[in-house]
Amino acid sequence: MRSARRLVRGHMPDCTTKRNRCAHLRWLVPVVVACALIASPGAARADGDPASDVLATQPVFLPQDGGIPVAQQGQLTTLAQAAARAGYRIRVALIATRSDLGSVTELWRQPQNYAAFLGQELSLVYRGPLLVVMPNGFGFWRPGSGGADERSVLRDVQIPSGPGGLATAALGAVQHLAAAAGHSVAISPPTASGTAPGSTDLVAIVVFAIGAALIAVAWAASLRARPPRAAP
Image (tube, rainbow, N blue to C red; front, top):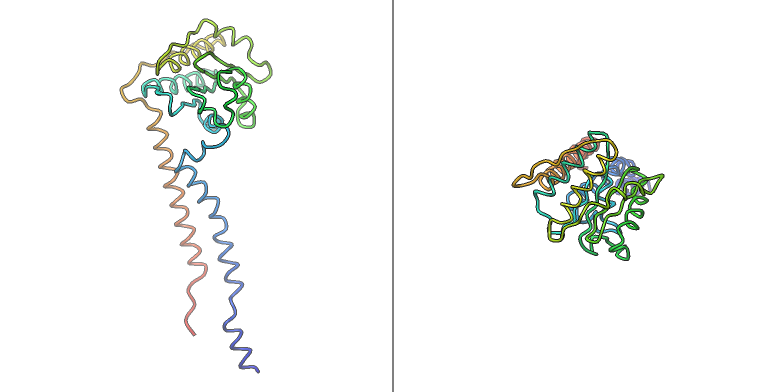
C-alpha cells in the first residue's frame, strides 16, 4: 500500500509549481494584448468612432481615404502643436466621407452635432476646444459653452473643394481660433514628405519593440523561477 501511495504521489501534478508558473505569466497577457493593438493601428480604429480613438492621444485625426496631401498633414499637426505651446490647446478632426464616422454615419454632413458627440466621447481624457471639418462646414465644441463665439469666428473661413480642401480649411480655422483667443500662430511652410505619418509609425515600432523585450525578460525570469526537475 505504501509503495502504491508513493507511485501515485510521484505521478500527481505539482500544484505549487503550476501556481508559480501562472503567477509569473499572468501579467504578461495585458502586455501582449497592448503590443498587438499598437502593432495593428487599424484594429484600434475599427470601433464605433475612429476619431475619438485617435484624438484621445493625438491632436489631429486625418481620414485615410480623404486624399489629403502628406505635406498638409504635416502642416496641420505642426500647427496644432504650435498652438498648444502658445497656450491654445485644440483637437482637430477632418471627416472626408461618411465612412470616417464609423458606426455614427447618421451624423454625416452634421459637423456641429458630430462635434458635440465627439466632445462627449473624449470628455474622460480631453476637455478643451474641438474642431470638426466636413466638406459642408465646421463644427466646434468647447465644454461649458458649446463654442457659439468660436463658430462665429469660423464664418469667414472657406472650405475649398478638392483633395486638400479640408486641410486648407482646417489650417485657416485653427489659426483664426487661436488668434481670437489671443494667441498668434504661424502656418509652417509645406515640406516634400511631411512628418505626421512617419513619426506615428516610428512610435509604434519603438513601443512594440519595448513590449517584446519585456515579454522576453519576463519569460526568462519565469524559467529561472522554475528550473527543470531532474528525471527520477
